[in-house]
Image 1 (cartoon, one colour):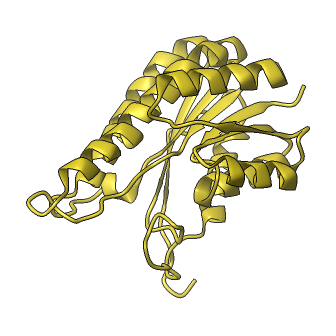
Image 2: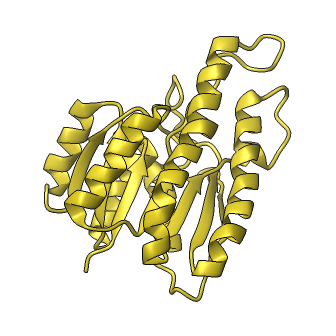
Length: 226
């Protein structure tokens, strides 16, 4: 039976690239994001037999609950969840930072991720499945006053604890930690950064390992001039 992958933040960037790579690797995907229009276009591209649009706000428990239920009902199972939705800082640092932006960032980067994982876990326990989380180089270095980096520190710490929780029943957890990625996450193009497809390839690598192998973290950095 074809394995099923839930992807949040699926309408563009890393999420959309991962959806394409997963379908190419033989997976069926559930695409969760706020933009119903973008998701519909991606489903048209991938085929409705291999992809399902799940318009939802990751910060809403009710909307994510409906989305996960629709995915499992439609495709019959859930084998992996990629909690990828994320939000960056509108202003750098702590003193100059924006409180409302911080609240939104915490809601998406931490709360939304936790909701995704909690809702997915009962289904992943049944399939001895896999959780993949989007971390960041920002969690591996000091960035002056970075609240975004602090949210990614949480993701990395949570990933280690989640792996310990899942391991007894055969589950796996991977955090994929890229450096700068050239996506709409930034207000300006970042041609020197990684491509979304680079990160997607790392996600598929982790998912495609044999059941005896748990990839705890994949750390990606762009190569200057590469």
